[in-house]
Image (cartoon, rainbow, N blue to C red; front, side):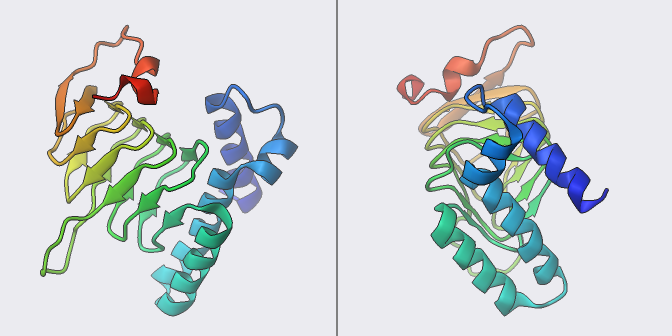
Length: 189
């Protein structure tokens, strides 16, 4: 996929997921979540080529501009969208699937360990994570799941789950269930 095609795909994903988005020019210029993922793609490319210091410097520069911190070692899929974005943190060994959406204040973080290796979560395709949610440690969140606002997730969840609470508890998500209310901060426990 060409760079231009990828940029257009990102713009379409933002327009699809944000009802306030009016047009591609506005999205491209004013959406910090999009700027953060574009910067991440460059920094990740540098990271993969062992230009680690330059990649980290680039990620810190992007953080200062957007308020979103994505470690250049994180692996992020296509059509990823961060709505609002302020305070989002994505750790080094995080893996994020395609068509994932995060709201502001989300952390895909690690837990303290002295051993190297996988420390951050793996997020399946089509997952939505609500404002302020924390997904911590080398856990797996199954595809098409929803993590409610302010939830703290420390255990694996199967596909089509709804996760709410502190600590979050998973339950099956019914296909007809409207989960938009779960994304609003006032729903949090």
